Length: 495
Image (cartoon, rainbow, N blue to C red; front, side, top):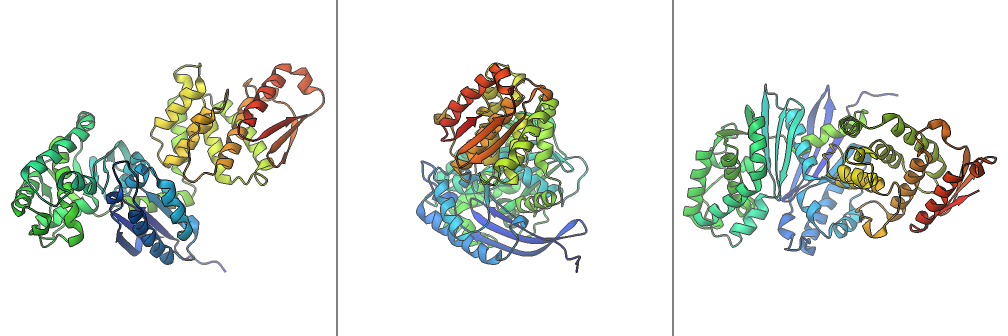
């Protein structure tokens, strides 16, 4: 019996200050919030000068994830999207955190880039707030600040700056004392962080300014006695700075709207907001209650309804660099033929095939620079481009597949992935190399007829008739390829 029950989605945001869980159902194109959870974790406070997370911070985070796992018990994994932001993308020992998390939290955690975080924040705003003209969205988090200019659902400029209310409060107000000099130092440092984007953002311009998340909420509440509908001005913030300096210490801040958990990060967030408004000549802004989590919900909904933004991202990048789409399609066709033969014995998934196909569409973007060292140029472009919809690890994987799609494999240049097992990475690389090699002549009709089988770590390729003897150059390429596979502990057997 079919039912028309609305689909329920879960968005989990592992932020630098707090972890959030949001459950919502989609009804007639809009989301109805069913449940919210917020837990202070102070993850950014656990980063040391070497960007390593302390065991205490990891313990706090794992304890919250254990609670979230109970809330999400029996929830379909496909309906859950979990992202980690600034602190976990900076932490050098993130693998240790992930190992602990996997033991008690059964959902995949995606570490997203600052650019991707900014894009998702904007989507969360755009799907709930409607304005005519351009808008600037500001999100001051615990470890980073995202600034986006967009119009309707389309972002026009994305930026993520390494400054947050937790990190700045630790750096400039670490002992709790509040002085004008400390504020001036924090504001100046934030202005320096913003300096590289002020001109381009000013040229784009905007008609509306919205500030999201905890820092904007508490600043608005403190300035306007809890009324979040009031606009925030630079004068409001400067008066707040003066009264905070008069208090002299976090413990003495006289604001009834400031909860105890926010006292330790209040001044850092205030300094950053002052710097943003000064640097971008913002007269006033409004608080917005929608942000990253709402963006995650819409992203998840679109993916499950076959509107994966990653497909659009790849198509747009291919068009920008005028890719030979026929050749890319031929490489994809080879992958489509090869993949079913190896998927089960090599434990590869449909997501792995999707990544291989995207790599095929992008592996020649470096031709726009030079055909010499094409694979290196292409990998650089992929690694340093904005790829909406892709996590840091997915983008790194695309770049890695392209980097080692031809010529020598250099193990010392192989990156270390958080989630992707090394064996899977190596198998994807050799499969991609073989598909590229089969299309080296760029003519679909010139590809050989052959059969393949998998025997453990060996891929056996059997050519029909005398084809290989009649194509000595291709045979030499295969022989060279065999030596490269050996570096990865894999064998290419040719018959």
